[in-house]
Amino acid sequence: MTRVGTKKTHHLIKPELVKLDIKCGRDKLNDILRSEGMHIRKKKNYMRTTNSYHRFKKYPNLIKYLQGFTKLTTNLYTASYRDVKTCIS
Image (cartoon, rainbow, N blue to C red):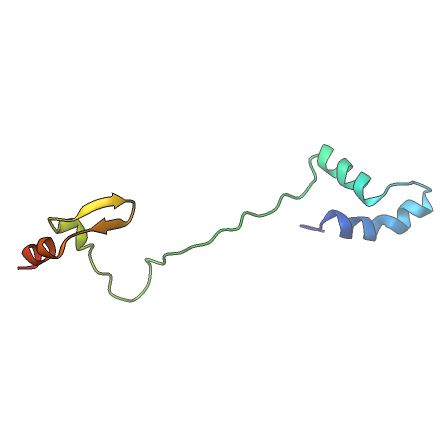
């Protein structure tokens, strides 16, 4: 039984606990599993936002090579129309 939570584990072993006359509720079982290092930790939610290994053409970063852009914060650039016009021509 891999990756089975406390609630389902308690439901599965409850008949054996009753047969052996052991009183152990779900919360107590959870405490026992945690103290013995058998508690299942949640998997980290991992969101992959960029897929660079695709079959489409990848274009270079053009802003890196242009003059006249001012970096305000991460991923935020500003430029006046005059600066952009001189960069392009």
